[in-house]
Length: 86
Image (cartoon, rainbow, N blue to C red; front, top):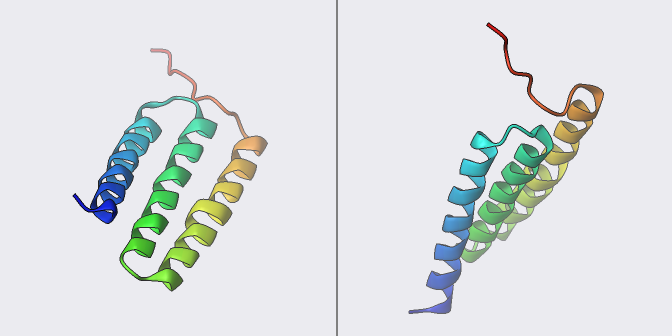
């Protein structure tokens, strides 16, 4: 197997695991970090596909700015989800 194929498979598997973790965790900070890992792996995949401009934009906006905005919003609210009592 080619090194590029191995890196692509690893990135895709990390994206799947991180997205599953982001959905299932109840800690909002951990969910934001996991979603930033998905964006970071997407930027690596864009770089492998020879789209460096898209990769830089995804890394800057998707993994960088969005993560900071979400973390600021969580800081101003509550970090953990509350269970609804019935």
